[in-house]
Image (cartoon, rainbow, N blue to C red; front, side):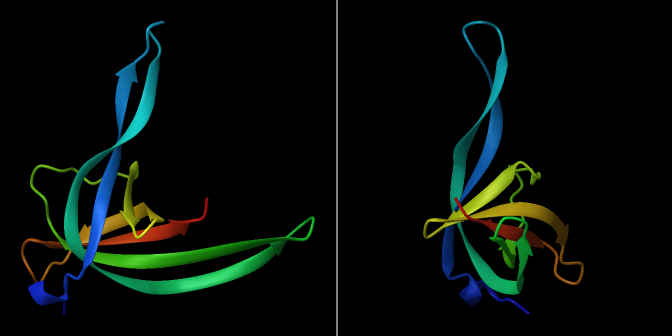
Length: 110
């Protein structure tokens, strides 16, 4: 169980927002919403060989955090931690602890 003292990783939360261009088209741009303290644990990893001598690596992480009342978690959300981008895959509340949630993310290589 994660306690408040275990929230040792500072992350920035980014979400996409619609913006209207001059020509009337809508584009979605990521902007930083806020910075919070979380607990990050790597959960799984693996790699696969793709055609053309290409290797694909996938690493997932579990982020435990307090629920933010003014921020809605979506799959268009990512966390930035020490230059690493963690894309949100899914999330759910911690049912035995009110006010906490677990967010599962995939590390995205740029």
